[in-house]
Image (cartoon, rainbow, N blue to C red; front, top):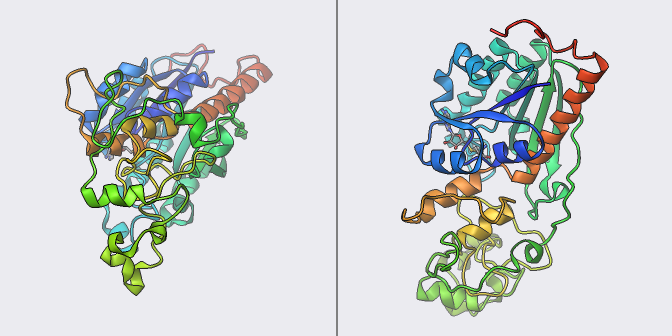
Length: 358
Ligand SMILES: C[S@@+](CC[C@H](N)C(=O)[O-])C[C@H]1O[C@@H](n2cnc3c(N)ncnc32)[C@H](O)[C@@H]1O
């Protein structure tokens, strides 16, 4: 049983890496951002295709799958237009809305055996999501929609995500995770101590952004799980003193060792953009710590030796990734499904077995 997957909007490869660990070989990932190529190819046995998904033709996609018995198409289109961090008006103007339509059109034309789509939970209520699901059902897929807590899959975050699974051969059951990493301490407790603005000699990615003197004073005054309300009024940001700013409690916070981290966003390396302060060191999370909380392995390579570490870009790529352990559960679920249908049908369900796939 030869399976081949293609990952649309592959980024640095969180989903691809997880799918491969779950037993699904990924032939290629497609993304429009050139800076994803190195991390994607350095850590995954898959080709990186630098292309806009809206210009990817059915013919090229078929080619990427090669001559597999079962074809799996997965993808996580950019989440920002739908995310709770965006606001209504900008959503409607954002051209990235249409990317899910491009994904749906490719499914209709190529008819891969299995499809999976992952995104922010807010997407579920959007008309574009309903359109995507309708496209799949019309094309003959059995579709299931899951709102998941990533912690149930061994991801030590409070992150919640939407996972769509669809197959031409019946329901794909979403399997639970196998790992028990639940807290910040279990995930990053063993990492070398570093200061704000410092980088580890052993691992260049274990580096944290420098802090201004006011932010240093603020983090020193912060308790794990606390808020800026614990600080002396002299260091509280002026906007928080206004009536309108008093409700913003989830910024400038330290994480707790004994709990999962908050959702790792694209800004997790900054103290001030969320509860991203280290539980006991006076700094924000390092890039490596963010990647580990996203369940990337400790040695995942994000940049070439000698490249300057660009916090903004790497933070975006890491924060945007599908947590590896969620990807692994998706991969295991698809593998179990394909094995079952292949066994039940003695291989006959593979639609074009024996024939050359176009
Ligand atoms: C949410 S991220 C995907 C994360 C990835 N699945 C992972 O696990 O690391 C969305 C990706 O879509 C890419 N993207 C945005 N517009 C695109 C387009 N038109 N064609 C292809 N990729 C696009 C971005 O560069 C970004 O890497």
